[in-house]
Image (cartoon, rainbow, N blue to C red; front, side, top):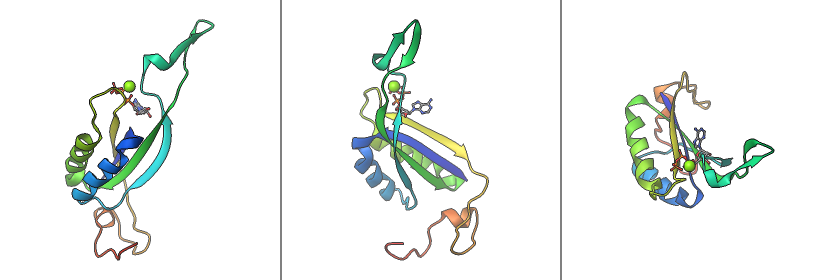
Length: 121
Ligand SMILES: Nc1ncnc2c1ncn2[C@@H]1O[C@H](COP(=O)(O)OP(=O)(O)OP(=O)(O)O)[C@@H](O)[C@H]1O
Ligand SMILES: [Mg+2]
């Protein structure tokens, strides 16, 4: 399994959520974060030391998937989050050792595959 962690523009969240839903993604965690992506305009020199002056508001998505679903999800985010301007964000793909669905005790592949999920769950 993998954890796909994407940092995207706030105003791209709806487009990305739509693309992920169309790609059959159902489980996702969305966080508001602040970050710095190497923008030189927001770096300043203070007493001879270069420091980051500004953090931008971004949105972070965490999506746990089975191995064979990874590329689909990455492609969906790439397609929906891109403007072509600097600051579009990043996607990290991390290895995941275990996943457990608390309700059923299912683990790993079974635990990341949504099956028979009642509406609103
Ligand atoms: N190496 C990194 N590690 C952790 N978070 C990062 C990293 N690079 C970027 N981010 C996060 O992604 C956000 C957006 O980064 P950004 O899009 O500026 O990346 P970039 O690599 O500089 O690409 P670009 O050249 O398009 O600006 C940052 O504000 C930060 O939250
Ligand atoms: Mg940048």
